[in-house]
Image 1: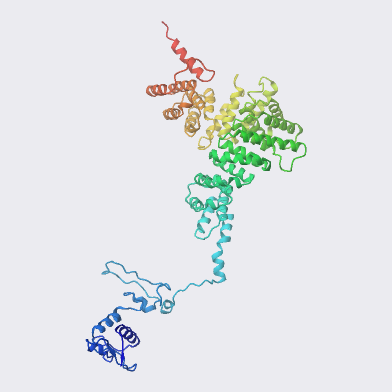
Image 2: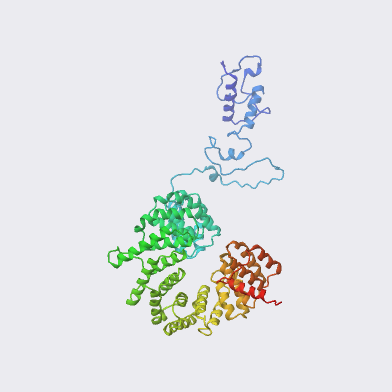
Length: 626
């Protein structure tokens, strides 16, 4: 006889029952398994009779211990999770959480009264084999998983439109990890194909992934350039936080590229541009001629007048030109004539009058044109002449050399270049001279012949050139009608900005009864109001008042925008503007409001437009006789 503890009896009996599968008695216990402790409840420890394996089958009578065993047998499945029979049929895991079951039926606290079982058990062989991932893939599987590394660049290279580029990226959007050069590839390709709408969700998808790794990108200037070309200014502003700290570690070329990016985006960041100027100034000798021009153009585009850097740029260019003339400069260090003209154009935009630089450009142009050497082109000559005119630098030698070249080679000049050269030279060269008049006639004839190549800006330049020649009468009859027809052909152009105020003033004197023309000009006005200066308000209202066309919407828009810019007006300009608004049909209340909000009317005449209004006002007051 062996004495067993009570806990061991329960565990041993459970193992014995699981190994035997005889028919159960009505009570659920085996009559062959004897537990003396069950018969005698008063004993301190139960006694189990040692028998052979065949005699240990079932309990004879259900006692207290038998009830506990019955509960374990009926409601204790093999994995300890009751109610999941799939585990019993298909085989559970021996340890919890070791492997994954593919077929689960989630049972929650829901009403199962109308539940219909739609589960179809798979084949036994498939379901009994548990899924265990292996770290060893076949060669084909590896190649297929890594194929996006060459399929993505190939797709980007083959794309020719922005939609195709973005669709390729979206196709491989889930393939990770993507490196920085992947983002650079897609942004570069988007720039090469002409850009994309900055509100496109696919572009936002690309930039949103880059947003979080801006601090990790090494070539931030290149990324800033791509952002600027794609007009993603919000990301460029976020990038500037990390870019500013890295500026001292960049080369002169990267500093120039950073400034170029902000110039393309026209994003005015005074701190960033000042830091770039401070760092690049002692290293200007390392910068290429193209980067010198980009630096000046960046400051001109952002309207930041850093005259210290501009003077250093001018001196550096003059030294390089002098070294190239003496044969001492390095190859590729001397800027071309087009780059000299572009630098002069940037100086003109910033109102930087450098007489030594423009004298050097004038001598270069004169020498190259007289000797017939390559370098000066019609667009470059036009840019240089316009820059001189804007800065009031009267380079008569340059103008005479250009006019002589135009007289001999007028057929090589496009219409826009001829209009720009004429606009710059007409106020300075004597128009009474027969030779000058002959050159101007040939220029106007060429402009008339090639009018189809003019844009809205070109039409405005040609109209201003025509107005400079028509001071003492119509220089070339019929030229204004030609320009009006070209302007009407471009009436549906909705983006280009031009000198609309001056054009309105010019045509109001030549064709004031053309209703269609002034209707088009009034329609084009609204996109220019945000760019208007006080002189533009005065010119447009004065020109429209001289015509017969009237538009109440234009009067309302001019009133609103002029009220916003009130502090920029002088007394004479405001008086002239209000007088012209009254002629345009402004109501008495609006006219009095403009009078009250603005400065007091001038008490003395002005040489500018306000003088006319003052003279007219004086005549009105002097008209009544006693």
